[in-house]
Image 1: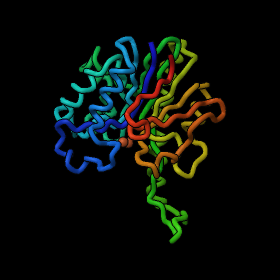
Image 2 (image 1 turned 120 degrees about the vertical axis):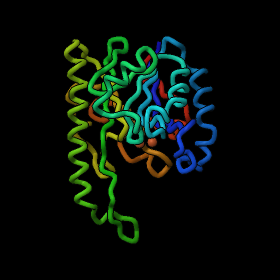
Image 3 (image 1 turned 135 degrees about the vertical axis):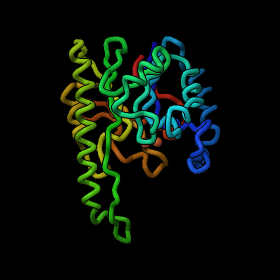
Length: 248
Ligand SMILES: [Fe+2]
Ligand SMILES: [Fe+2]
């Protein structure tokens, strides 16, 4: 029995956004088949796989049908987190998704899922990604303050959702936590955030995040141990489509 994770599969078996969403880098070539093969080699039916958001380019549930079929066919228990591209997932209708896919896919938001004596908690998260204003050498001179103000509100809402997830687990007497976010825990210029503070407050052992694609984005946030929490980036291209083993 083991816990694995990865994010950003960006499936598009039937989405019309396929042409524009098709990424050109080599790491994305046949990534669906490569990921499937890696899962088959690593995971058994007794294992758990947390998919850390950006599952599908489909704009609604109908357009995601084949993508869901692909996910359901992966080995183990699949737990999904909401990514910024997951338009099929209305944040207010997570319970309906859990009812619709009961026993097949599990959706993590405002709730938690047990794994051994751990609670798997999480939410989409949010970070400010600019626009930044740069000088000719690429140094940051400033940023769009209105956009930053808006980002602050979204961060606040996501922090409430994460607390809701932690509290649901705590109410059931869980004291060991693994946190999953889709967005990195900190914005590019930050060393800490409400998310890192909350992970520390509850004594979470690990915080897993995704969303960052391409070499230039892989170091946008924290990696490794900080104040007792282990941070891991698990976007699919960063992991070369090999899920990370989080716990035995
Ligand atoms: Fe993504
Ligand atoms: Fe994303």
